[in-house]
Image 1 (cartoon, rainbow, N blue to C red):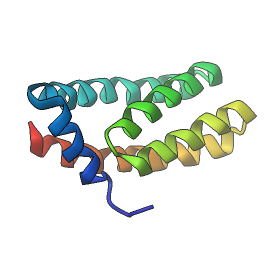
Image 2 (cartoon, rainbow, N blue to C red; image 1 turned 90 degrees about the horizontal axis):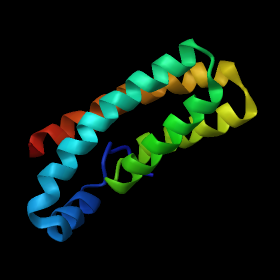
Image 3 (cartoon, one colour; image 1 turned 90 degrees about the vertical axis):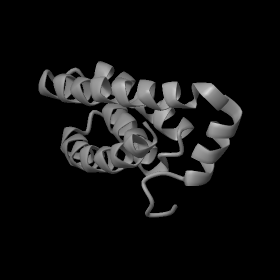
Image 4 (cartoon, rainbow, N blue to C red; image 1 turned 60 degrees about the vertical axis):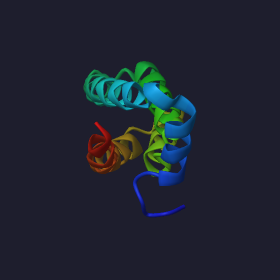
Amino acid sequence: MSNDPIDLEVLKTLETVMEGDFLLLIKTYLKDSEFRIEELDKYRLSADLDNLRRAAHSFKGSSSNLGALSLASHCMNLEEACKEGDTSTIDTILKDIKPEYERVKDILRTYV
């Protein structure tokens, strides 16, 4: 896996396929992702591992679709840790997700 926050080839393909809806896709992802980050924090603080797992799963899918593969991988790890109930790992993964999301967000904001 590359160290780049986003696979730019995936974005180029999406831009070609989605045409005029590409910017809407980016804006929707950014808005939804802010909500997902808030959910991750909320569910972790309340120790609601089932909803934390669901939020991680959703964030994983949308990130993967945009080519944010490292972020998607962190979300997958969080999803698995929630299934296992491994709270010490959950905290570590959450600390990885946030800066990676910031890297993704910085790139996506150049499109809008």
